[in-house]
Every structure is written in structure tokens, then in C-alpha cells.
Image (cartoon, rainbow, N blue to C red; front, side):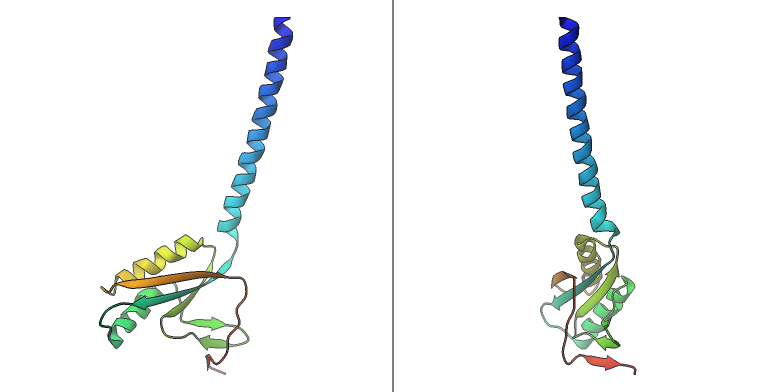
Length: 131
């Protein structure tokens, strides 16, 4: 009788372990999906306090060092509005925010940042660069 109970409990434990394993694999897929998918992000930074043209130039320089651009490419290359940046790659939104914070901190100014992960982009009246 004890052997039957032992086998029954063993089978139940194995079944529960398989269910837990399935849940872990699903969680890993969800986590890896965010990291492995190529994404586009738009970042808006507002510098606070008394701001000069050189502050914006410093911000542009630091954002470029972090691989941000101030252009987007959609049927041509277009310049984004001042203090808006674009970055594309296999990033989490939080990673993009961290990169932007690192760059903005180098200006020595207080700042606000908004990061948006883009599924689609539309615009009007952006300056076309080149032909």
C-alpha cells in the first residue's frame, strides 16, 4: 500500500515539476522576445534652467556617442525636431532610457526624458536632408 502511495505522490510531483518547467520556458520566451526583437525608439529630452545653444550642442554630441541620431529614414532622410532623437536596435525601453540619461547627465543640466518604442511612424513638415 505504501508503495502505491509513494508512486502516486512521485507521479504528482513529476507532473507539477513539468508544469513549472513549462511556465519557466514560457517566461524565458517572453523575456527573450523583448531583447531579441529589433525596435525603433524616439526619445525627447527637455533641458531645464537657463539653456544656451552650446547646451544643446553638448546634448547632441553626447547622444551621438550613445548611438542616437537626430534623423529618421522613411522614404528619405529627415531631421527630427530639436532635442528629439532616434535609436534602432535590440534594446529594451529601459536600456534606451538609461543611455539617454547617461548622455543628458553630461550636459550638467537638469532634464526630463520621454522614451517611446515605435511600431509605426508618421510625420509632417520635417526637413528633408539630401535628395
